[in-house]
Length: 156
Image 1 (cartoon, helix red, strand yellow):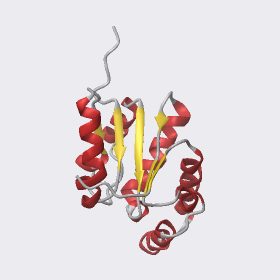
Image 2 (spheres, one colour):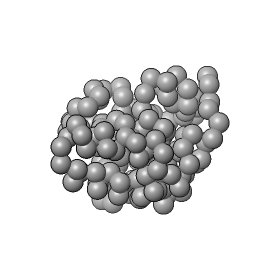
Image 3 (spheres, one colour):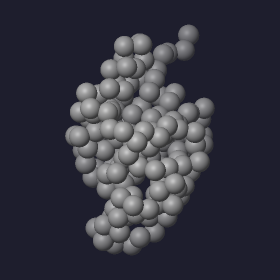
């Protein structure tokens, strides 16, 4: 008999303001219909490397919902998680449904606006910019996926 995954959906987002808005709304709606959720900010400290335990939880999930907001790219943790989620999609039957929250999907694909502003900051802090290629590539791939574009903020 196969074990049921502990979590079915993984939600990735950036910032406390997101937690009090769309993320709370999304969590409530999914939990109300019986879907178990894991969110990256529950256990991942800002700026830390991804722990093997977090990778296992992401791999356990069937679906990932990255909420790409204006501040998403400013978090090294979010960018590392996004890369991990894409690896899960490549290796497993993992579905990614991006939510473009107050950012235009085209800006995500071309790394413009707030997403573009954050990347040079990462380069300054981390020296060599070779890792930026992977994150820019991740944004290109995320933009190509079917997702949702929300252009009005949800306040709960």
